[in-house]
Length: 111
Image 1: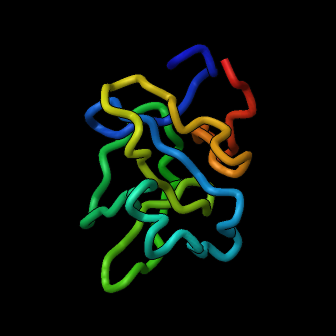
Image 2 (image 1 turned 90 degrees about the horizontal axis):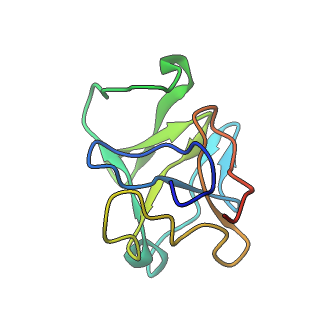
C-alpha cells in the first residue's frame, strides 16, 4: 500500500484512515460538517466482512442515526483524494490523519 506498510482497506481496496483528534476510549468522532466532505465516515449496516483484522477490535460508534465503523475504538474514514484502490494520499495529512493498521494503530510511515 504505497510503501507505508500494512494498512486496512475496505472491500474495494480503498485505504481507511483514523483521525488523531477523534477518541478511541470511548469511541468519539470529531470530524463533522466540512470535514466529512474530505474525510468520508465509513458507515456500516450490521455485519462487516473482515480479512486480516481481529474481529474483536471492530465496533461502531453512533453518528447522526447511523453507525460508523471503528477499529481499536478509532472511528474510520475514507479520503476523497484516494481515487484508486491502494492509494494512501491521505497519509499524514495535516499531521493528524493516518492510514490505520490491522491492530487499530496509526501507520507512522510516510512511504
